[in-house]
Image (cartoon, rainbow, N blue to C red):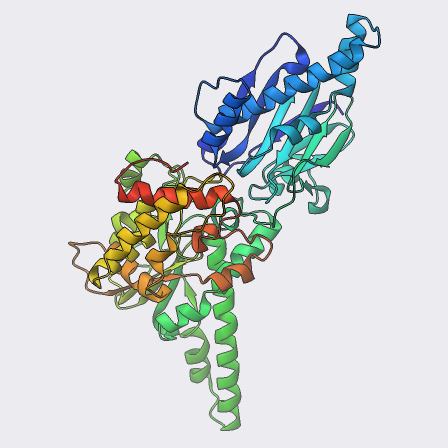
Length: 520
């Protein structure tokens, strides 16, 4: 096996792919490190390094991991060197034996003590061995393929299938909490390096970030769309004849197909029942069939177009608002004035794109009602494991809940939550933490928050007088559609690691104290 390859496989912000290098005169002590990861306890890791006599220069998780692994890399090398020196071996033979016996799995086991975060790490030691390690909750995805010529790793399965012309069963998943070590001679071995945790693979990866051409992700996104059919029909009062269904490009397209399939099945059942009833009464004719099928069948149109070069979600903050106003355009004439217009979106995080672009341009078509349907539930809490959604005050759901508290005379909840969050972050390391930010949402139903979001994102100063409604996926339907990726902390606040709870409470302190930046 001559080559090792690793790829992030696209779909990630550049900030989540960290390359770093550590050089030494000894080849087995040279370290290069890269991967998709965020650690929640970087300060604690740096403190532990200082306690071991190290002097980390940067307060970043990349530097902390590099120094942690590097420290135990040195320890492993020294242990082997001392042992082999007692065997009266020559220097060249000692170097060869170190290369042969070097145990990277032991290095990662020792270095990873107290790591808290989501990670898929790849590292190489000089020209000798390599490793790939995945967090014990399986938060970050990681897959690999192996044959007689190559060992290849990627965040996702589909790029490996495409690159090497594989079937799905030829691609393996790196088990959570395991490190895969590849020796110079081509031997591959997977070893558990840390205690197992409950599976919490990120569901938002499947909704938005991952490539939709993976067979499982494709079906999951279709299922996400299908699960919304009941809410959509209620919103449009089952007015099939006067409704246009569409989607907001590009990641919502597959969910749109799922929604349309579910709606067609629903309408088919209605048509069958009507035909049987009309046939029994002798009233079945061509006019009735045209009315039932042609004029009342779910109608889809490509209403919204997007410049594929612009990706507003991962754009830098100072450019995002400007991008949102230029990324989209509409197909004029695709909707009749007075129609219901239903547009599927993958998720609604900040509401910026809706307010500054989507709703403004859709209103030019003069529909009776615009319904925006999110395949994701309301995003209420920050992420700290790899996807850059870290500032609580920028979430439209949080903004809506705060507005409702103030409107209903419950502003004291904001201060009470602040003091509760202070108490949480002041707990010592290792203490059990709780998510105190849930207090902000508890007084309200999901429907009340959705209604307030609708009010907040509706653009001001437009001539259109029609209705607007924002519909969000339910938590129950999310888990039904994506059953094997239960990580839902964005939506529920149930973090898979202690560091997540510390981050969410710190994020609220930052918001309340008007402090900009991440909470980790």
